[in-house]
Length: 478
Picture (tube, rainbow, N blue to C red):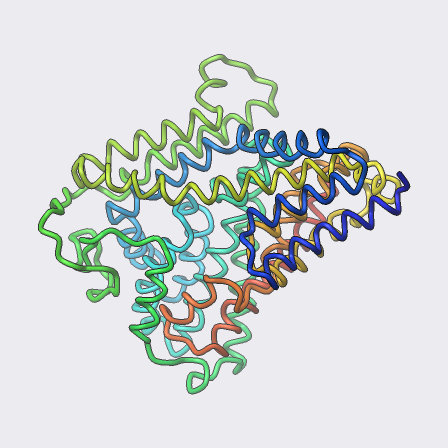
């Protein structure tokens, strides 16, 4: 089959997936499978080859990241249950002060809190950010909303254990330790620079409180919370002894629940120690691999599956001591429910990528690219950006774009971690009205649609551009 036919059919398959999701409101899982089936049959793989590519790609990516995603989501569910997020925000305020709070909050959300399901993290952290906004100044709401949006979205696809990051690493065969190191190198300056650019624009008069700020619509908040995974009842808004400076009234679910046990007071560092320890073990594994140092114990403990398992078990034990066994079991049950759709969607993205690979797209594109040019990285960024504008899903657009370019990496000698970072960066472009995050940020932060277009859509798009501009010079040394 000619190269032109393969290229055309690949384009048709991707376009069909987008149309099925956007125009016909078909479930993304079903749309991705149909697109994979069309591509396999139209490029001559045959019935058996097509089915093998779809199921093989599904199984391969599940084997790579299935347990990682599950352990990460469960750890996040427990941290949510024991009230770790509210205490962390209060500590950040005390340490960094109001002026630096947007940077501190954004970096923390993008790095340390990515095990928590995005909508849950947003529902918990937005009221805290909103209550802190007046303490920053007249531009407080704009800056805190922007910091929240940038931190949430960047972490998903650039930082381990964000679900998009895990999926990209599994799809492209990037060792998770390496993904953690390079993701951290990229996400921290990306977030800081993007927040700084937006703060500069706001100071130059780009924010109009009369038009960009609205009232807090309680009905909208309730609707948003119903569509998102729910914080557990009993999350308190009262200040704790170590929460000096925290807002006394936080709009988080405070419904009385007589069955909920009182939390024991545990130092904040203890609550996060198991998760941070797991990430540290993964990072150590990456460093020892680079240094060609081998030790059976270190090698075993630094395996991502083992490290995140230990982190989840440790967080569970701390949670049991803090909040009681029943509440932790309930949080784990909620985590299992949340992880289901994430796992299936991620794995089906692997099906499309495997079909694209079997169709021979890598060999075709490899004729036009070299590892010394920016073309493949810019191409994956543009594809991910266009897909995100159309579909509205950061994870789907990142996985699909990376899947299209994944076969190119071995052909031209390009490090797959760069494709992963470029795809993640592109998928951040133009978060807009098709995203649930957009509307949750609008209602929970008290912005108008115009204001949310500035803080969320423009803010995250600037982060997307900053990220790819940082990835390109990084490609010269990797």
